[in-house]
Length: 297
Image (cartoon, rainbow, N blue to C red):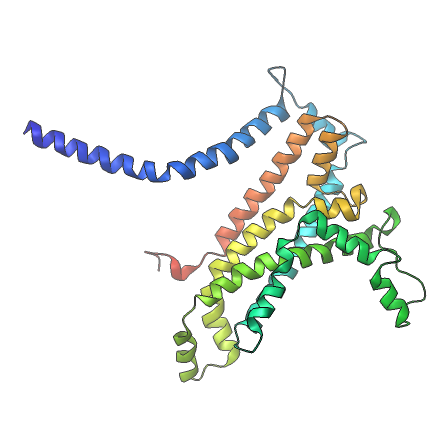
């Protein structure tokens, strides 16, 4: 009995620690790169010399040097503009490139080139194109569509600078959304579409009832990843507009590097983290793929 009991105990222990061993790398990564930075940012933002303090919050909300509300507004506006545009264009590109035609692979490669370009490089490319002497103004002047160069940059032209940022971000990051959605669409068996055709389904019916439900997990993943990056947008904005179009990440950088307010910069980081986590929860809640759920009616 003692031998059987010890064997059973060892089996229980083995079944208990095996899942932990499998999860250990992921837990270590989350703890080291997610949990610890958040805890450290919280301590930096709200504790001064070992005591709880709200000085960072007062500075963020009431200091004349702070552009928090403006940065929050521009960050949300950019995310609200860029993410839907990128997703729509990525879906259109996926629908087109799912069809077999000569040169399709080349088109896929060309479409994904911007993903290899850094944020700073993308900002510089679009800045050179949109300056008063850039080739876009030269083309418009040459075609006689405008009488004088369009000015995109400067504090008094912030709306145009915002448009330039949206164009640069869409051009740079749409490839990421496209890759995720296109990869998910390629996993769909052709037999499903052929079966739909046998039953007389139109193109729109196949789109609505076959393609979209099956690529919903890919769309969910693309939206989560791209929205998180949108809340952290910095380099493109900084190159094209500086603080004329303030965003949360840019203000965190400015507060840390120029003003040496580590507590306020940490608070900015916590705000970005809160936005990212809350948006991720909403995506997971409302874009759940029902057909992948087990035990749900």
